[in-house]
Image (cartoon, rainbow, N blue to C red; front, top):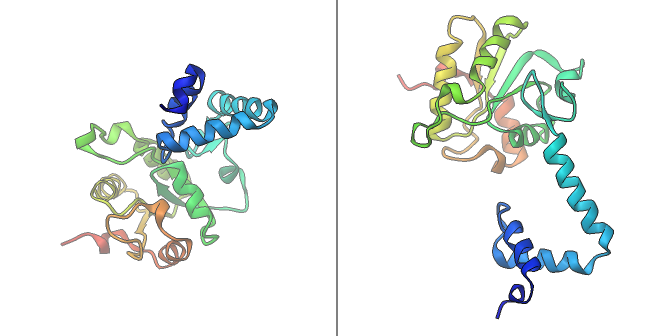
Length: 207
């Protein structure tokens, strides 16, 4: 008999925790039992922080990065190079790239990649707002830092075509990032070198 069979409340907590990525039923059960052993205010603080996260978090109206205000800390930092935009798929990729300490420009979070199989087209992600930024801001270079997957490459090419007449320089991460690899799982050293050794996008397109 499972421990959760003794309590519907425990069973419900285990079910909810097991929805988290990388958390199986056994891990969820251990987490739930751990919380039960803690002082009540620990569980209350955890629950409150999750509710506040869900209800209070915002997305930067400029780059779509996660933030607590209308503009994220990166966009608001006047020390950043505002002439360079690094295009990424998710907020996790911003965190990953910031961890390299090699990039000091701005970001643009697409919120996904083009994937016809999954029903995701160009209009479902933040490509139009990227084009508007390039046209309206003093942007000199756009770095395409999407994962080296078929969907990532498709999105890179679509952006390349959309920005072709703007005159902006387009570059892509050097292929120190393995083909088929997710950006968030690439080690910081390799990712940092890929940023520094980025190449013009047109040089990466098969002729």
